[in-house]
Image (tube, rainbow, N blue to C red; front, side, top):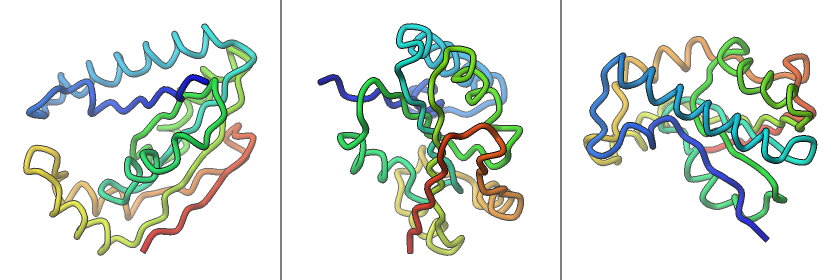
Amino acid sequence: MNQPLHLNPDHYLGTPRIWTPERNQQAWEACYRDLETFLQRHAGAATLYIVCGIQGGGKSSWIRDNLHTLAAPAVVLDAALPGARHRARAVTLAGIYGCRAEAVWINTPLETALSWNRLRPADEQVPEEAIHAVSENFEPPTLEEGFADVHEVRRS
């Protein structure tokens, strides 16, 4: 059985992760291109898992630990995606291709995420003010956004 595809816009920045607004936009567009290609190839059969939550909160770790449990064909979009408007493009693409979309909200306390962020390699650390901003404005995903299911994973 094929392993689900794991997409994260940070992976498109390369290493070291040099962040600029232009490079960030290019990374997101490349990520969405690959997402659409996958959904088109597996139209009507794939599941899109949007794994969202504050930066440093353990999204990628949860994916690493659980990717093998997701039935293929599946694609995992790994990003903060703090509001419904940020998740809408991916959910819409899933709908266009007749694919199921599920949200996995990694619900991590702010102080835990800040602590874990400090343990990352320097070029993977997110500015703390960005983590605070996402935490303050995060909208938990809902079925009304078009998700078939919403899973909350509490981290501590």
